[in-house]
Amino acid sequence: MDIKTHQRANKSILGTPLEIVDGKSAVVELITDDTMIVDGKGLVHGGFAYGLADYAAMLAVNHPNVVLGKSESRFIAPVRTGEKMRANATVESVDGKKRGVSVQIFVSENIIYKGKFTCYVLDEHVFDRI
Image (tube, rainbow, N blue to C red; front, side, top):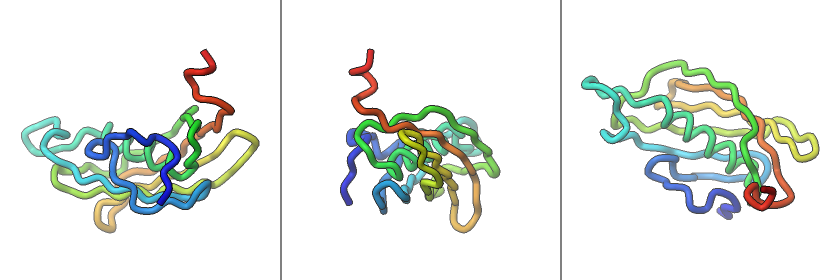
């Protein structure tokens, strides 16, 4: 598996890549823990699901200069501490530098999140443009 983007991503908060098909798809897994909870009942903050989805979208594109332009998210079910989230990201469209990526996150067989990400493949690193 050749990871070309987000190479310094913290796997404990963004997930561990399990599969990457350049420019097509990615599967990323994140096991939640007590550092992610927001209340006494073990509810995991939705930002961790979103971060996992974003990371999976970037890996599906898998280009060194990919950046996120916009996203639409739908949180379907809550996540408890200790549960394993698995994100499946698929590049659905390519239009020049623009990539449309859909992401679904599952806990076991249950879908907990759906998102659409618009990513852009830049000619140079985003900070080199400033």
